[in-house]
Length: 198
Image (cartoon, rainbow, N blue to C red; front, side):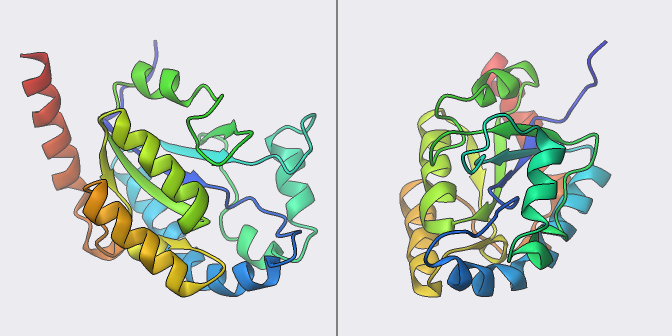
């Protein structure tokens, strides 16, 4: 029998990262301060029964499984960041080929199967993969939370603009992570789910 989850999921995007691109050092500098915030949000989510779903680029290593990809990234320049956010055995892990977590992945099917209606997004980069994922989630009618202290981009101002866009256009709640009341978010999602069924 499949486990029962609340209708809320935490998506952690592209944190298993090799940072092997021209501006990778810039992203590492911006990403390091948010790693503890994501880690804390992940722990609080799991305490409340919220499933944690990593959605990650494969960096051209299509034959790698989760452990091989983690081990590869732990040997690269961003190992201090990656080491704080390694997936656990009970976390879900999905490989994506492009920016959005929904594009050519089984994410929609997984969320439908778990009856998820609300998504909390965290990860890298805020102005690209997090933004593209939020856009696709919005078009699929998910309620969105994108904590402003749990995403980073190469340039801080770009991340801030992306958060403003997600808040104003995609109706995302961008409160800092420690202000999120996960029990209330679950309660509201369950009430919305009942109204949808009725």
